[in-house]
Structures are given as structure tokens and as C-alpha cells.
Length: 384
Image (tube, rainbow, N blue to C red):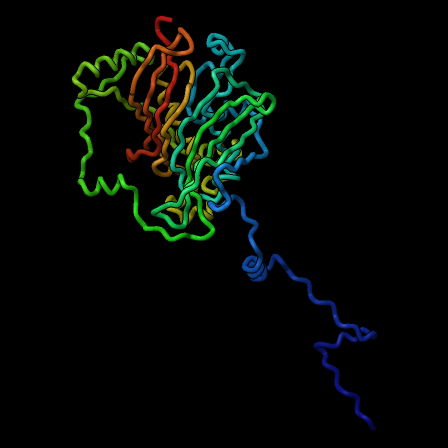
């Protein structure tokens, strides 16, 4: 008698047709399986590397942003900018506005925020911004903001081979009329795809200072504080300081502080379409020097300016220059402000105000400078 071969019960499904069994479906949510998948797939990266920028390139930034009353008031309230002309119809009318306009700080932050995805989302150090300018006419809610940036220059970083240095000229325009609403020039370090060899040296100015020793100038012997916030008060304070044989300066600190919270650190930059991971991605920032997400620089700047404006009668913002961010500000840090009055001229666009140039320094609870810049503003006259 012939004996039947024994069947393997683990492989034989006995379908009756000799077909192989269906493979078991992949459980993509199984932790081990998913971890393996993450290791093997490519990441669709956002942002541009240094090599993607060439002098003369023009980048049009999408999607743009409609400037709203809600966005404006949210920004102003959270940064303590309480100028009534930007809040109340009667105060706006007294200033010659048809309605409360968009505040220049919100306009600046929105203009920069729209550019982040194309220019600086890869990260890198913000080295400075200058020539920030606004139109003489007000900008109102409902204006559709269109933003473009031109690459002004690119350069190799002598100290950080993994970065290059890019400068852009950015213009925010009215999408309907083409009128320029906000413009500035900013410079960032931008990561390279591949590091380059450098001499590892710093700037010549740094080398000269090291060779000559500490040549830090002495502070003025006297600090003069204006009696008030009108144009005449700043003029009088400058005259007092100038009469003190140049051993005095008009400089003072502002009492208010603003501790950074979830709204200022995360919500405000999101409202300006600022997608930089430094403000939103705790996981990525855990290994950074801050150890956490950090405040958008324009929030820090606007908060310090809000403190300063609370002690002056601002009529109109003209522009900003030489802006730098010196260290990060994170949730729990408090932003304070210090002001130095540089000069005052009776050359404003209206007889109701005069022009004053300030240096503002934002600092934290440890008295460390976090932002600095010069500001030109028209300040209301007491006698107008």
C-alpha cells in the first residue's frame, strides 16, 4: 500500500485550488514598523539653503495676507501698544485718519512673516535689519498685502562654515494699487547644503580690538530724563545734556515689562504666517541653546517699543535702522525697554509734531540686551 505524504499544516491552506495564501497586511501604526518606515522614507523639506540664493533673484512670496482689524488689535494689545489713534475713531480723526489704521509694527511683522517660508525657514541667525520705511499715508484694514524680496548679496561666513550670509531687500505692497507699504533690508545666516572651508577668523574690527586691549568708552557722567513725552520735552532734555560739556546723555528706562507667554511666543507669529520652527516646534528646539521655542523677534521689538511709546506722544512712525537681535527670548522671559534720545529736529510732515530719533534697547529680567535699533518718529508738540 502507498503511503500519502504528510502535509505541513503551517503552510498548507488547503484552498482546493493550489493558490498561495494572501500576505498579512502591514500594520503601519505598529510602533516598530512605523519607526522602520520613518528611517527609510525621505523628508519633504521646507525652506531654502544658502546655495538656492543668487544675487539679483526676485522671490514673490505666497500666499499674501489681508491686514485685518482683528489682527492689528491682537498684535497691539499683546505688545502693549495703546496709542488711541489706532483704537478709537475719534482719536484717529484728530490725527487726520479716516478710521483707526494698521499699526506699523503689525505691518512690519506681517511683511516679514510672509517671507519666512522662502527665506529663513531653514534656520540661522538673524544678523540685522535696517532701512525700515513706511509710506506717509496710512494703511487701513482690508488692505491685501503682497510681498516680494530681492537678493541683494550673498557671502561666505568666515567663522561658521556650515552657514552662508544672505541679504534681501523686501517690499510689502498693496496688491490692488502696487504702492509700497513697508520696505526694509535684512541679513541672515542661512544653512548650507555642504559646509565650505574657511580661515576660521573673525572680523578685522574684532581682531584690532583684541590686539589693542579693552578700549570701551566711559559712560556719560549724567543721564537726563525728559520731563514729559512731547517734542518740546525731548528738545529741552537734549539742550540740558549738551550744556553739560558732553558728559551727559538723554537716556532712561521704562517701568513696564511683559512676560512672554503662549500668545506672544506662538500665536502672534502664526497670525503673520511666520512658519519658522524656532517659534512652533518644541521637539526640534529641545537641543537648541534656548531648549524651547522662542519669541518672534518682531514681538520682542514691538513690546519694547510699546513700553517706550507709553512715555511719549507719538504722532507718526517714520522708520527704523540698525536693528539687531542679540539673544533669544523664550516663554517666561520678561521684556523691558531702555531709550536713548539721539537728536530732535523741527522738520516733521506736520506743524503738529517734530522729528525725534531714538535708540531703543530691549532687555530681559537678567538685564541682558535682546534687541537694539534706532527709530525715527514724529512726536506731537505740546503747543500745537
